[in-house]
Length: 307
Image (cartoon, helix red, strand yellow):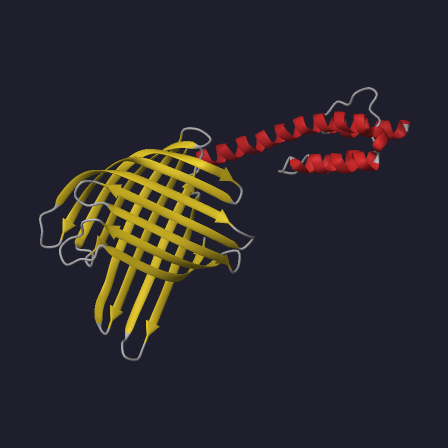
């Protein structure tokens, strides 16, 4: 036991831990704690302690004392890693640290009609220490019997500044084009506050709101400038290891024409970098231009590749 105690004190000293004078802990327990303290998940220490106390019930008090000291050491190491990562991100260039997803899908039918539809998109994200940035590009194009029946484009940039663990401020600059909805261009500028109502592993829900300004270039009509209110919802739920449900919705409210958009998606991972996505999008305009429908829907089946 004297030899065991000498080895334990030596190992604890190397880990930066001072043991109480009466601590008598089996060597196997110390070895498990030495391994667990380097793990990124603090729950590993609790698991090790639980197993150790079940195996050596006579040493429960000493194991608890050792656990408290290893917890402190684990937190210290975790903070060092976090500080090192924050420093690395702050020193990164403006073009570094971006992650993205590309999306592409197509369909074709022959017989009484001949049509081709293409849906493509690109999303880029950069998560910094204080700022988050997102850039979205999307295009939908369809031909039916040689005629274009759908041509919709969207480009949006949204920065976020973290005000706390859940609260943040956001900005939005967005361009849309959809001549079948009656406009050749629509520009939106907005900003406000957002809050992460749910933020845990595999499940997130964020709400945003604020004022917005829109300019709409209506086909064969004068341009329209309007102030409105913007609200949005972003919900992600990882149902299983390979399946995720998403729901994005937004609403622009003004006196002239309000716009409601809802996009529901179901994603299934095929590999680490490749996913299949089935989505259904509804866009509703309360006062669309003349000869334009007020509701537009689109079902997509696309492949998403991450990079």
